[in-house]
Length: 127
Image 1 (tube, helix red, strand yellow):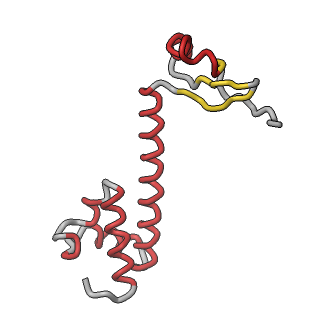
Image 2 (image 1 turned 180 degrees about the vertical axis):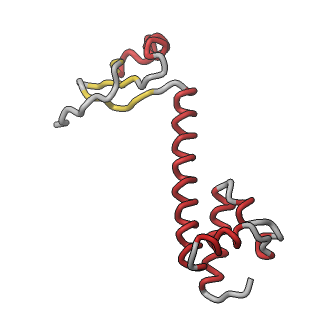
C-alpha cells in the first residue's frame, strides 16, 4: 500500500501517457517541471534539457561557493588573519607549479589542491 505524495508541479502526465503525450505536455509546461503520475502520486519529475542545465549550473556555483568558503576559513585559521591569508593566496606556490593559489581556485580541482596544500602546511609538511 503506497501513500499519496505531494505533487510539486503545475503540469502532470500519467505514466501510461508518456509515449503519446510527453512532448506536448513538456511544451505546455514552458520550462517548468512536469510530474509523471502513477496511481495519483508523482513517480518522478521531468524538466526540459535547458532547465536541467540551468539547475546543474546553479548547483555547481553553490558548491563552488561552499568550497571556497571552507578554504577561506582554513586559510584564516592557518595564517591568523585576513591580510596574511590574502597575501598568501596572491603569492606563487612551488607546490602548485609556481601558480598563485588564487588563480587556480576557479575549479573544484583547483580549490581542492589549495585546500590540500593548506592541510600540508598546517601539519608541517615541507612543500
